[in-house]
Length: 300
Image (cartoon, rainbow, N blue to C red; front, top):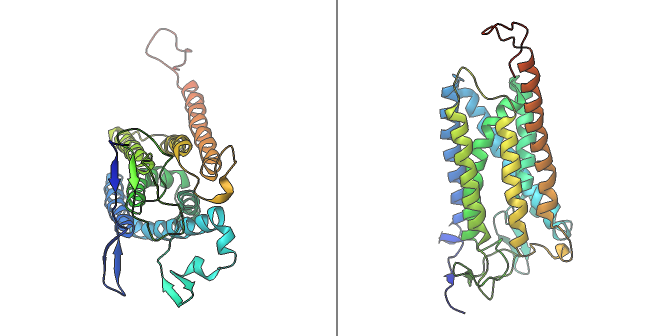
């Protein structure tokens, strides 16, 4: 077969023995750094003190990492980690030659989403701020972060799709240092790129939605979050049809774990959008239009 792309990029940028830098870690850090500056711009837009953002950032970091790690271990690889509980929390694995540093080999985006929701709920209670107000703005940053995470997956040669004859199919020939998935023996759908570009598009839309709105008349709470949930997880749900199974137990399932975990987020997003629309309609019914000869007529 001709006309495909050979992908033989290794997961490490450099390795100095006891010290190594991986593409995934660099992109993960870049996502948080850019996210911080983006949130700083948003907070300045709304005259919120930067010190609030500094506290919010730590909640986001811990919520993302703890949620992503636990999500991977519980949803995707519990058969292994139930016998290696310690490896959930420390970046090493036990081998025949003793303990070996591996980093945290396994993070799940659905777990990260749950972790962020939980962390920001705690933040909203501590800071006494609206939970939906925080989530609306965090959604913009998370969409951008998901773009970087999927690029990191590409650099790890992981989470790719089924074989394809399309000219942009990727043949992954260098094995990453994870337990799964297997490296492709033929060109496959580069689903990491599909998702990365789609998430970048969602970010651009949310960014434009937020900054195009009049400062004195912000969007109703929950609109940006609802849009984020419906678009991001619908994209994830659809692209999963092109992916190979990430874990053995998904074989034979009508919907894989990623799709099953996406459905509640899509439903919640639809609820937020419908709820917002209903509230907007009720509010409009109470606005009397005095600009014509029918003072009892209401604006809809």
